[in-house]
Image (cartoon, rainbow over all chains, first blue to last red; front, top):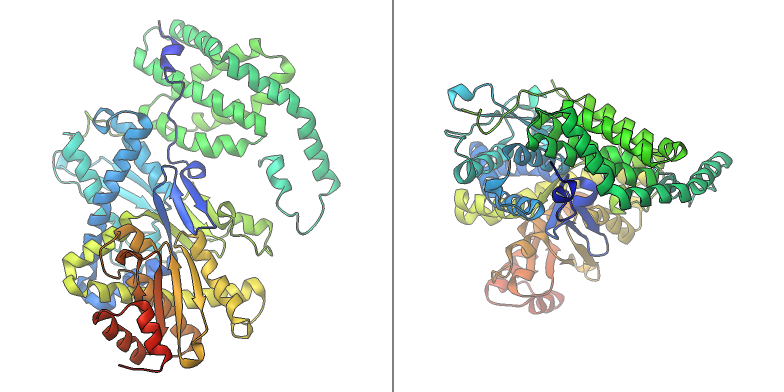
Amino acid sequence: MISVADLLMSDRLPANYYAHEVYVRGDLEMGLLESRRGDRLLALPQTLVQAMYTGLTKETGQASKLVLFNCGRWWGKNFYNRFQEELADYYDTPLSEMAMADFLQSLKQCWITYGWGKMDLDQSYHHRGFLVVQTWNSPFANQAPQTGLPVCFLEAGILAVFLGSYRAKNCTAFRRVVSQQMPTATDL
Amino acid sequence: MQSPIETVFDEAENRYLKTEELRSLGQYVVSLPERVSIYRILRDQELTLMQQVADQLQIQQPDAHPDRIERSLKHGILILRYCAMGMLLADEGFVQSRLLNWLSGVVQIHNTQAIDTATSALTIQVLSKALAPKQMALLEPFFALSQNTLSQTAPENHLTVAGIF
Amino acid sequence: MTIELSHQNPAKLRNPKKHNHYGFQEFFQFNAERGNIVDWNDGQNVLTTEDFIIGLVEGLEEEVGDASAATIYTIGCEWGQKDAFFFEKWFEKEFDRNMRQTNLMFLLETWWWPFTAQGWGRWEVDLGDRKQGFMFINVFDSAVARTLGDVGKPVCYLYAGLFAGFFTELVKKQLSCIEIQCYSMGETYCKFLLGGQERIDAASFWLNEGATARDIEKHLRSGELR
């Protein structure tokens, strides 16, 4: 028989770690935002997101897409480590032992709370060896110049590292490349 | 719905509260002792109540894998805890935004709608025996909200570790 | 097809004329259904950790090498310029008066308040030398410097660009900005000099020669230009 007392061994049940009401904290006196773990957060206003596109284009021209992707990769690499630590601490279990479904649900919720829009994983192409990540309401696409070309390079970079690291370290099921669908501004 | 206490703070600088606003605040205050006593019962008897749910659930679903039953019981306990807090604050928004928006995704991914519906029905059944009808009336809207939200989650054909490639 | 985001902050809809709205919960409205965050001024916000700063700095260094500082400064300038337009719009809507006929200190404090709520640190503006054509800005807890830590040189090019871009637009005169003291040099706060290109070039020269912020202040106040 199942004992509820055993289920509640530590008297706590992990729920939505990334609920914005508890995840994001502000200290107005100090001009600081932080996460529930005490890590510093920043809110990028839309004027800064726009400026990243125009500023980089001014300085690096055509290469700006590559630059953004590379910045996204660095961003993703560091963010992934943090995400992993946060989840491992909260669920009190190493990521390698965490159910994939819980990992993905946390990632989706994290995406929402950070205001990056919504994301979902589409497995329709898994027989061809890649995974499609769809994002909606991307603030990056929303603030980028409306050129009709893909613009979510930052997200692509983040996802490439993010899902790549998860695959490499924890989940042999992601056997081949992780690919992203980058929605264009016109897709929205 | 927003907590009646929270709305009171909004416009202190501009105006005094209207008669109906004071009345709804008054109603909340009058109901508060009852809310606190329900909250105490739930807090103190959580284990006993949920063990009853667990026992009946296993009888009802003899073929369900113990992992699924355990998962559903955890969802049930979370719902109970959040509904208790929501009832205390008289704030459905609290339950919706803190728990249900997230839990509906979890239920979808793990495909536990059916068993969660059974757990929820059993919980209400067990609570109805432990609480007076007047008390149950204060708690019920929150369970209705949870059942309603979770029943709307369509089962998803989703990634599992085994099924990716 | 383009889409117009309906940026409407519910707390603001309830109470549109409230000005002291920089309590964190009121300033940001999270829309969990869309996964978007909108601030009091109906601007869209994106939350990030310090990893964003690392990503920007490391990613650029890898791609453009030594030019990364200048590139980040340019991004800052673009940011400041765009923010000046955005600010003018919300300021005039919120306070119902022309930005240019408003007390300067009040105007500047109002501009910086959202940055405080957004976690970019506190600031202090010293307008004492403005008649001579320059001014100093102190930033406490710079997001860039705090992220990168003690690296022995100024690192807050993003803030420098932001000030240059914003003030250039505000006073309609080409201004530049340089960080002359930084948390990343072991100081307790960051100090920026804002002024015409000539003065900024001079400050940059003195800085390279090993001058401290205090030395640079002295040089400038005695009217030196190298």
